[in-house]
Image 1 (tube, rainbow, N blue to C red):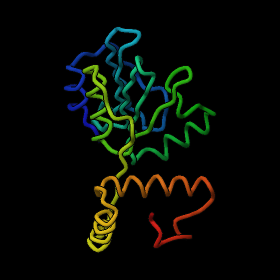
Image 2 (tube, rainbow, N blue to C red):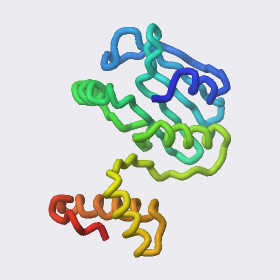
Image 3 (cartoon, rainbow, N blue to C red):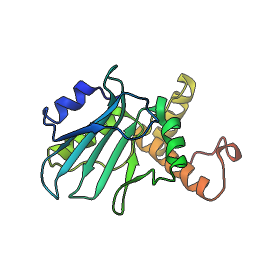
Image 4 (cartoon, rainbow, N blue to C red):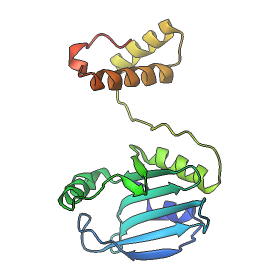
Length: 181
């Protein structure tokens, strides 16, 4: 998870607000810090952490110019967050107005997007998804990518997009274990 130190360095130690976090899902000693650049079409960043242990529960990056919001919730606390949001009948994914959070799977993805937002640079809006393959699977998939004359990353992206499309159609990976194309 992104550390408090990494977040502070990202925002150049510019804190514009802070308050006790209002929900109970992360525990009793939870605090939120915000860093806003002061521009309506600018950016802001938030971190929610334990003010005793310094454990980070959540980080947020808000890109007001492009109307995008990114969030990384510590996976160890996602279930507790989801339970409290459900109990509160809260819009778990709403960042502001009609903008929903894009929940990110990796710290690197959040940090790359946040760094680009803070520097007012273009950035990749796709979500990085961690994948784990055995050595045998990795070799097999690399050969398949080679046969298709595409990079391994393109191959994995293609496979993930296909799996998501098939899932929307009610097909599941168990229905076609050998068919990745």
